[in-house]
Image 1 (spheres, each protein chain N blue to C red):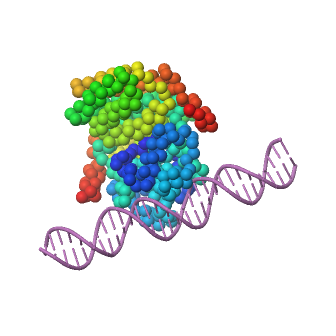
Image 2: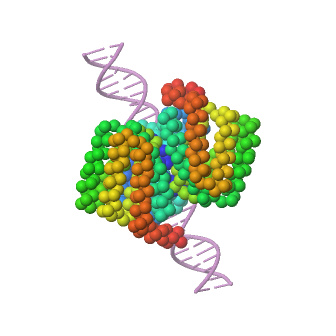
Image 3: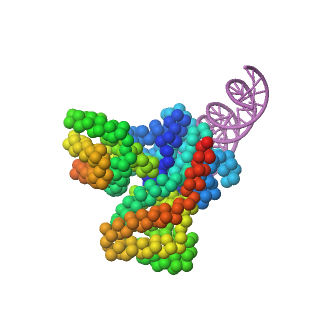
Length: 237
Length: 237
DNA sequence: GACCAACCTATTGTATACAATTATACATGG
DNA sequence: CCATGTATAATTGTATACAATAGGTTGGTC
């Protein structure tokens, strides 16, 4: 993973290559392209009205983002995420999110802290209503604020890179209203620890937050996971 | 970051694009191209006897590897590593290498363990002689074995991706014979903890190993770092 | 001399043509 | 019937031509 200086800024959205890249990324994350599906250069180029050149360059980027796998002289295939991958991702994230929360405690700006508070407050409303889309959006934002607040481009980029996995994993797992409420409660405690300047507690809570999120998935059974594995041929949802 | 399923296997060395990619990667890591130096497509293409197309694709990969930064319609520039980056890298690595050592304790094969022992034994010889090239080679290999042994493709790829930073950082910092001896001693203790099946101790030692390595750099002054910084200013003016 | 504008050049971005490789279909022989 | 070889199609890999953009140069005006 790599690492990823200024990636967002660098990957412009306005060149054809950039547009293809973002479009394909979106489509993969949204599940339009299933795991192990082959991406054809000409088909995608025609669909977006561009030639193969920008498509190919976009492929090379998606490859290193880990979203597709390119086999030379054969083709580009959407990568699969296994149950083991999910476990590893959450293990790694639990450590890094903890580190991030600790650093954020020391470097967060008043504005960022305020947005964090607002986020938790708003999420408590949507959680009680069971508005799942808003919840995922707020969850993304909550963590993103912490990434920015930790004052480490390295860590920020690293965690941000994991985020696309999180998006794809969410598609494969059940998330309940109950978990939403519990998750937001954990967010609130992390926020308060940061507000209180207790970096150790913030780290501990953020780490637990990831562990809890993973445990919840396991409890609910990572339902699509093993389908996903075999679904290379099945293609059913 | 990306995340990097099977990256090594995927990035073939035999296509023109692959050759360009590996050549440029090598040259950047070896310091042939200085930080913030601009890479021209035609110049590199002519040097390697290929057209711009494979060069451009190689650029896109190098960008996401974090080795270069592409500014749209302007050019590709070798990324700089700041002192802050080094600090962050070692902070992150200290956590992940610890995690890796813990997992490796549980999953290492007898063959891997044996190679680890051999590595430490051989390194103790070269350390005493002050053979720095062999030491860095053995150090790389030591950590690489642990990455493989941890039985997590995710973590393995992640740590492997950090490795290129390590290579570039080594170019900028002094490493002494004394540190070589101390470092290998730390390797030995990690190896013995793993051999004893003490995963907690292995994790603790591996984490300390990174902290010590970083402290040693700081003590020796990250000598080239601020040159690098000033070069950035000159470039951006 | 300082400033600005219109060109000019160098470089990147994209499209297309062609080469190389791989997959598929079909025929042939065992 | 299956295995194998070959021709054909589909697809990726690369080179090249052209378009678009950024930076610098020249020339003019104040």
